[in-house]
Image 1 (cartoon, rainbow, N blue to C red):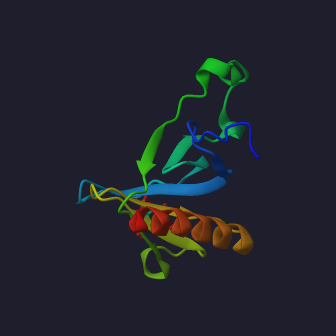
Image 2 (image 1 turned 135 degrees about the horizontal axis):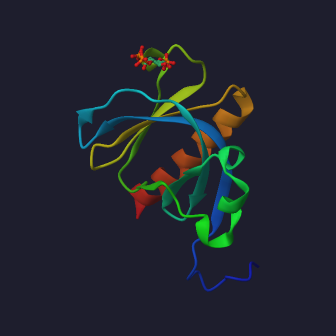
Length: 128
Ligand code: I3S
């Protein structure tokens, strides 16, 4: 079993680099602005960090790994979004608060894994 088998610290489920854009905030549409983001799925949250490749050497200091934002997956909706972008492999994540994100990868297997993993967390939370 894991070192945290008491379940007090959420397990890190997945991490990787995806292209991301926020397209709505509280239901209000935003202008797209795609950029690479280091995405971490931990517990009930999807946490977004700055693309590690775009960081300066000094920003690698441990204290500087502050998330840019994070998304509560409870009650969230996940859908493939072919019609919302000219890019391939795009899905849309909508939070209960009406924030909407598009996430994308050029690598088919990677986006499918992310979709399935996030979907599993949302479904698990729906059953609680
Ligand atoms: O859905 P849209 O409006 O066609 O999205 C494109 C634009 O946001 C574009 O920026 P401008 O605001 O300068 O037009 C972006 O560069 C494109 O990446 C957006 O479309 P895709 O199809 O890449 O999601």
